[in-house]
Structures are given as C-alpha cells and as structure tokens.
Length: 471
Ligand SMILES: [Zn+2]
Image 1 (cartoon, rainbow, N blue to C red):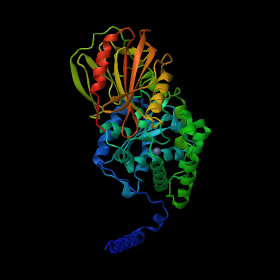
Image 2 (image 1 turned 90 degrees about the vertical axis):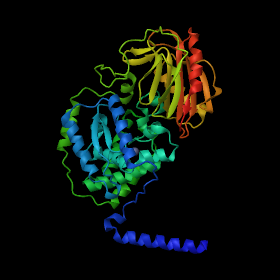
Image 3 (image 1 turned 45 degrees about the horizontal axis):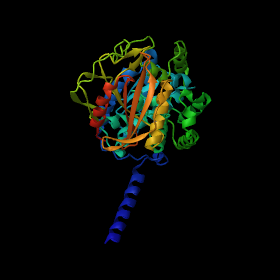
Image 4 (image 1 turned 60 degrees about the horizontal axis):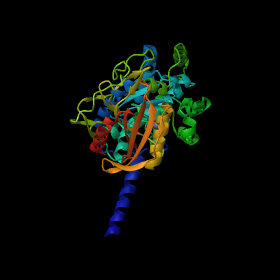
C-alpha cells in the first residue's frame, strides 16, 4: 500500500515538473530556481515589523539630507524593485530607499521594503551597477522574506527576535565588539550562507531584469577587497567572498540582460557631490557618540547633563515592566525610569544617568540587551561580551571568575567587574549576568552602582530574580 502510494506520488511530481517546465519561458529554465522558506509570519507582519524597525533606525542613524543624492538613489532602487520577478512580489510591500551619512561600505533593508544605503557604499562603488548590485541583493532579502523566515526557524522571541531576524546587511554584521550596547546592533544580524546565496542569485536576476550587468554585483566584492574591506572587517570575517564572486558570475552567464542604460554620468556627478561633504562618521563612531548628527544634536533619549552620582535609594516597591515588545518581563523599583528603548534598555533612578561628551553614562541602574556572539558556549560567549565592553571602557577590569547561576529559569553566568565611572571618576561595581536565548544569542543584564553604595544590591537581586523571557 505504502509502496503503491509512493509510486503515485512520484508520478505526480514528475507530471507536475513536466508541466512546470513546459509552461516556463525558455529563458527562465537556466536560472537557478529559488525556493521560499517556510514562514509562520504573514506578509502583513513583515510590513509592520519593518515599519517599527524603520522608525527605530531613523531615530538612530543620521540620514543624508541631500535631495539630489536621495532622489538619485531612489530612482535606482525603484528601477530594481520593479524588476523583481513576479513570483516574489508582494503588493503589500513598499520599497523605499534612504541614504545614511555613514562611511562603512554597507546597506541594509528591513522587511516590507525600507532600505538604508550608506553614503560610504555609494562612494566606494566604481559604477552605478556596483551600487545597484548591493541594493538588488538587499531587495532580494526583503522579497524572499528572509527576516521572518529566519525568525520562523529560530524560536519566536517576540519582536526582539522578530527585529533581530529581520534585517541583514550585504556583507554581514560587524564583530561583537561593535555590537555591544548598540541599540541598533540588531539590524546587523547575519543571515545564513544559504540566505546570502539566495539573495545573490535573486539579486543577479533582478539586475538583469532591470538592465544592469549582474556581474557588477560580483565586482562590488572586489571593489570592497581593494578598499580593505571598507573598515567593517569584511575581509577577515567573510572568507566566502571569493565563492560568492564565482557563483554570481556563473549565474550571470545564464541570464539575459534586458536593455538598460550604461550611462555613468549621473553616478559620477553624485559621487562628485558626496566628495564635497566632510567625511562621514563610521557606524561605530555614530554608536559611540550616541548621536545622529555630528553637530551634537541631543538624541532625545538622554537628558543633556552629566549624572550627579547622588540618587535616591531604590524604592522597596517594584513595578512590572515589559520590554522588547513582550519578549522580556522584569520588575524594577518604582522610583526608577526606563531610559532608551529599542534593543538596549536601561532602568535607572533620577540623577543616575546622563551624558558625558555626548555619550550616555549611568552611575546607578540596570541594563538589558542582546548580543550576537561567535561562540555558542555560554562562558566563552560571555567572555566575548566582556572583551567588547572593555573596548569601549578602558578602565573595565574583571574582578572575579564566572559563577554559575540561573536567570529566567535557565543556566546563566554571573561575574563582577570594576570600572571607573566616566562621569564621577568614582570606582564602581559592574555585575554582569548572561544567559542564552533559544536562537543562540546572548541575553545580558548589567547592574551598575558605585563601589561604596551597597544599598543597591538588594534591588539588583530582586530585579534579577524577576526576569522572565518568552522566547
Ligand atoms: Zn545579505
């Protein structure tokens, strides 16, 4: 019976395949087929996640306010978006393109269509085609709904995983050192190699449809190599660049390129225009200063004054707070307030936080965040996080080894560090508790108080015990 059924099934598949081939236009047969991954999110979820992430991104990245550059990039983007093969189009998606005033050679796209193209990428490209290649690759991640597909594969973790999984950059994410404490770190999640290859393949197909030479996408890898990886550590962290170059070129041989323009005058004029601006900051610099604009515009999240270092005792009354869009629940003293949102959240008493030289500084309080680490081992992942924290805090020292503990009913690591507070110059104790999310990312809680103030320890313990994670 089973055998018989199998036979019938094979017959059916063979028949379906035959039909599929006979109705496919000849030119399409040679293209590498792309399969859609299972996705438990709706297309409308993509749109909403992307909208929320775009709002956060635009609160954190400095956009280049230049209509001529902006309009030019939009025109190229729209030409590509209208060249997406029909089976990968979603009427609900709205592709739009904004230029970020950042030096790194990169770009990222959010579900549903918002795309951010770094000024450094436009400046690095040798031709419009190379720039369009990066954009076509990013459009492909969106069209193939890779963000929510990835979130589907991993355990659902509220919006935290949703957002964490939604965006990929063309060249993968920065090292964990750049990720720590970055509110926008989650935008740089690395997709699997499989997803990257699919985005390269579809990207090449979109290029050909739009009248660009698909090989320009491959050429962009070489352009980046020549520029030393664009400062993002691309060469060191992505040894697969050569494979991708070869694969895209193989795909290009199978594609028929539609008629398009090879006029580079407009591209050259835009590059000339960009050269007239002062050098753009790197993403890391934007992150360090916590400022969207070099002029020192307040981010709005932090009062523009240094913390006083003298604060009320933590209230014995606690309030439940939900953060990361329902992903994490925690109780904090009810005389503390939440500072920052997105994916790096602090709770601190009045006077326990502020800014020094444009950087947010906390003297008292707790922070929650998520970091992508190279290691899946909890202790080495935690060590990676400490190393990256130390990069931005030269006085940070480990004072004890790792101790096993538990956080949210799962295995966790606890360690203490000492630091000199940037605002007060006082020695402070930093407690770090880490655990792993089901998708392998490192979830951490950091608690900070001056060394001579022991009255915060009870509050920290209560907060730590209250953490609930829904992943
Ligand atoms: Zn990608």
